[in-house]
Image (cartoon, rainbow, N blue to C red; front, side, top):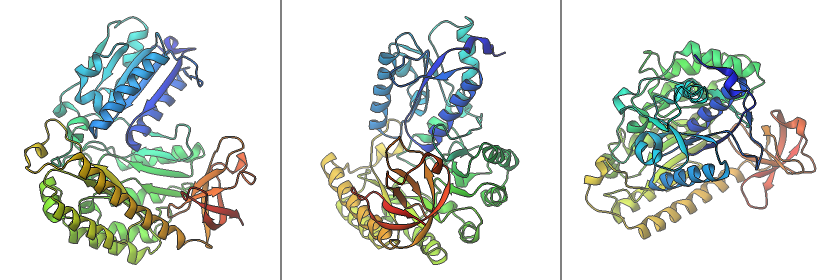
Length: 443
């Protein structure tokens, strides 16, 4: 039983690391606490409750998590500090040993965070504790559809992963693939519309694997969501190449609300490296998916994840990968240097890439990414476009995105608060000062 009176008048601070799924979950925690009388602490105001939602995709991510936890403890003396997320699941003892941390919750326990907080505040459990189950015990699904302080909603449609790629710890941190029903997700989308939402991003760990729990199909979820009145735009955060059915691409090409915007992890353009990674596709399949998307949606934005310097990636295999990626008609590369994670099968693979070579390879791919992104943007200069604008600090330029995910900047002199969460038609001009967006003129 949750005692809501224990929360009245308290303040909370939140910090999220990692993916959009983590952001969605943190936003949901914040909304639940707000409904129970907890106010978000203002800038510089000490909080009574601190929640840190962590990531553990790389060693750098672990380091950032530790820094964030220490900073939260230092800036909020006497606060009740909760740490959850992937790093908390994988390194519970290490997190629990940090001075000032009161509660560590694993991936299966985070759905009951409010109950744990309630028990602590009414004195049922005053001791510093960590509640983290084993990977095989992670079975719960915590629903989440929130926007926090953003314009777009993030709808969690799936959690966990069954793939066990050799370099990855996510299945150990998140558990096996699981999902709610299509009907429950449609209801959450309808609620987002009732709250004024116009754009929803579908999030998860391995979204294309939707249906493991309910024996439904991802394409059927897409079709059902497309029928929800009031949702103007959907975006799919990431889809594995082997799980992007041609039927899905063909449906999105004529969909009412699913945008011409895809994010597809490649990781390597070398078949040998893909095999070492235990990825479930090859270059030919990946190239086919890109070709089909561009054939049906020539203006589609395609983001691609690439990992550099993984074990076994010799200089020759990297060059093969680079040449393949260069040949693809994609828009942007998200480049990640390989980070060794304890307990992963990749540690058994011979040939270790030096940190210096990882940096050089990352630099080359990032430069290639800039070339592709700028060329994509330039093709759209002078064109009319519909943009969903997002709130900006007073006196600052507003930004938003076109249907095909071009970042657009509206000059500060033209920006108005009432434009927030509004779809407006603009003409796309040249690049802004730092070449991260196209300037827009209202039509």
